Image 1: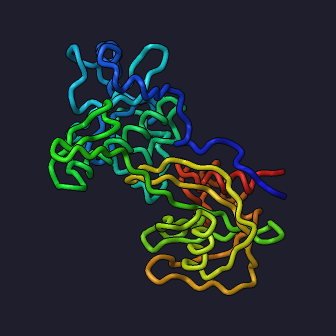
Image 2: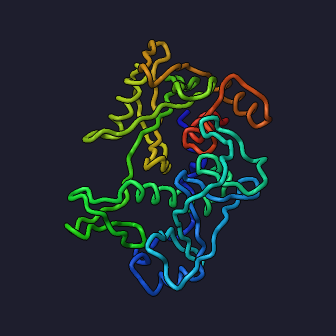
Image 3: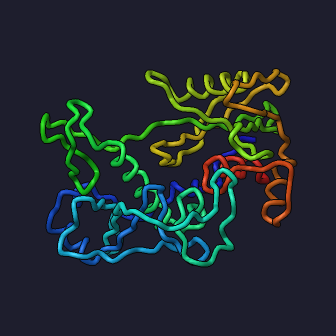
Length: 316
């Protein structure tokens, strides 16, 4: 059986028009700002969300023109969507992304981050929040010219910066990372591992960053070997998802391996690794859906890792 992703990863969904020509059209930008919806995001990547974590709370744009710090996220049905950085003193929600908690029962308005709320948002909101976090993370870390060190100016509605001293132009950075579901050659088992910082009992598929001068397929083979000491074959692409923490693009792959090959765990990176049957993964998914405990904790619904495992475990 050759599985494919059965749906888009949740943070890959988007509906707004990201027309590049809009970003340099002053009159159109002014129109989009005056009736625009503004998504405010604090330094911790949180925004106000209500209705059980399913509805973004937009602010109304004020003034005739967008301020310098406003970032155009896109346009849909004549409505402009923007992002603005803000400071927030809102208390911590207590929802820790490392525990993959379900916020479906949270009814009151809260400041939540993308990891906690992404899977509960519709396609429009998920795409807007993901883009806002990615752009704002880049701007917070790219305030100075990489060439001469002078403070840069935002241009193109926040989609680029220019240096007033040397003229260098920069665009938002995205770091490619591979994430791979390794299954047995007979496709009945999957290799799952856990990092030391994760809660006990939580497991996921393996991932790592692409190095300079390296192909995606070579990165898959290297990362799996480095992290668990397993050789893989039959590497194939599944799909991708933006993961702006702070600026990654997760590129999903599948590969096969021999479960009889001994694992060798990377010290400090991987604490456990186990081959798990499809039946066990299905049981863990069913238990989670029914609110029951299971010894196998799976990745949260916002991640592409969860989509990969659900697709692999689903009946053919």
